[in-house]
Image (cartoon, rainbow, N blue to C red):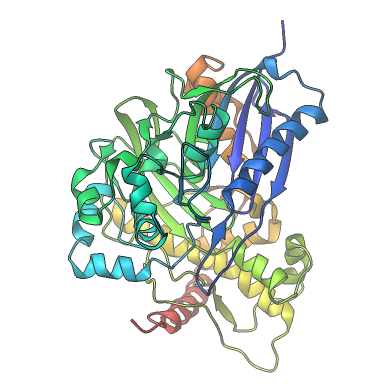
Length: 505
């Protein structure tokens, strides 16, 4: 029996990964490249999409060469990506109109405030399940159209189209200027602030209110597409024609990769930010507690499984800040030993609201703060407080999910790079008061996109076959008693109060 492979491109906030899997869902080969984080002004965050494309080609070639794989044995490709990050480019030249505006970027604050002042926040919440916020793609599209010279003129002349990073990479891989496919899936579209969640179509009323031309937008497809988005080109980085047939936003891909396919199952991905998703099945909840409603995944055109999501802007990025801005650590992996060297944070709380506060507070005027400082505090306490901030923010979201759904959290599946940190995972269990379950394979984002591609072409038959392949590596049981848990969390809520509405409106 010949070897058969399935692969995925995982284009994240800090880097791009290409992974090849076998029928058992085991990693055969992978490669990873970081890309530059560009900060032109305070609160502005950009990526160079051409650099990301070059890195994508490089990691594909590296992964194939590493194990001397035959690309023709790869039967399908899935794509997963940093969501909301916004790009407009000329389909005739392939040149971006400007750098991509990253989901963390807050330059659209005034645009968002103007929409709120016009009373559009209720319309947006009802139609899209989202809130008017700098986080999402629509205000970023509007900023580019309003601020990049000749942008609107290019749209009118058919020389500008929009996409998140999934759309950009699929377009490039399927031919680019020579017939590239301009598509996205329902999960990514549900993060633009432009898609009607019930109809799974672009919302004409919101497009009109924001003055965003519909012709900019990609066609909408299910996350696992039996019709195929398109094929890679023989002269491309894979050197073969391979169907691209899976596409999900990174957090939905992690949910799918964790096999959270039943209503009530939840996961948290620990990456640049943290993203807690709770599968709600075919039921579409509009949150009353500061959560987002989003498409979890779609296996059939015109149908979707939904989720409640708590998005936390800065978690792993706070660890990067300790490393890159303050020089307190050399590697993120050091935090486990450093934080564990002190019994607590010495009364310090760190609220890393660098991009404002996301769920469940949604305060784009908040800014970061370190509170409770005394002369006793050393770098070890700050490092520990940083890890604690990740866990406290996750609890904030869990509390909101319980309030919305009425379902008590029994456990939490965890994944992402920081989930490898045993100290962090134990801390998370202690602060939540429920077990944290870590899978044997931690890169569930790439795995979820791979699963969707494989289901589309029959590489795997059904969800039950995928569920059997999912394995637990370790369960972290909570050790704190309730009094300690509530006392520490009360201090966190007090610290949050110090950060709100910091920037003048």
